[in-house]
Amino acid sequence: MSSISVLVVCLGNICRSPMGEAVLQHIANERGIEMVVHSAGTAGYHIGEEPDERTTATCRKHNVPIDHEAQQVKESDFRTYTHILASDESNLRNLERIKPHDTTAEIRLWGSYLDGKPIADPYYGSMGGFETCYQQCVRYSKAFLDQVVGEKPSANL
Ligand code: 4NP
Image (cartoon, rainbow, N blue to C red; front, side, top):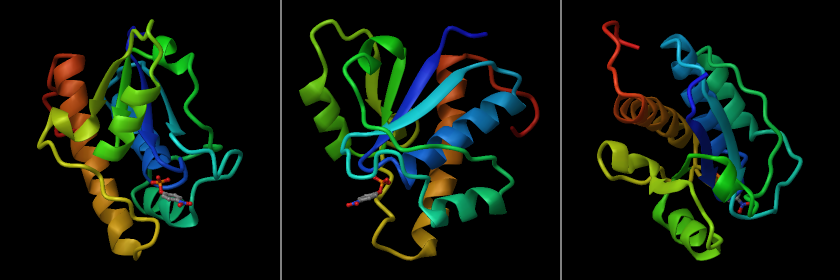
């Protein structure tokens, strides 16, 4: 088991971050990296809910297993996880605002490991936004693992 543990964060924890959790876990597994990955939202509107059906459909389409119940970020998360990955700047700002003084996690925009872009909120949009989100989750998962775990795989994983 690597000592890396990751919390992927969005607003509601039903669209972007459960997809991010599923994709990052899946790619880490494919690379043979044992890693704890969870997700949470900065807001509590959807606590206890399953992921949005468009997130589930997008993961299924790409054969990525997904199983999650929405939860809100809590104070202990800032000490439990080594890395907290924010989906966009608004969530990054909220995480920085609520983090306790004894935070040990590194808190970054997920896209900062690659192109510095946010993952746009697909909630009020069409399925296209969920596919874009998926593609970003794949690229950002690979970039994160390349940089944080260190070795790039020889296959295209
Ligand atoms: P997420 O998307 O942050 O990617 O889970 C959203 C889900 C719900 C809401 C907003 C964004 N909402 O306003 O209820």
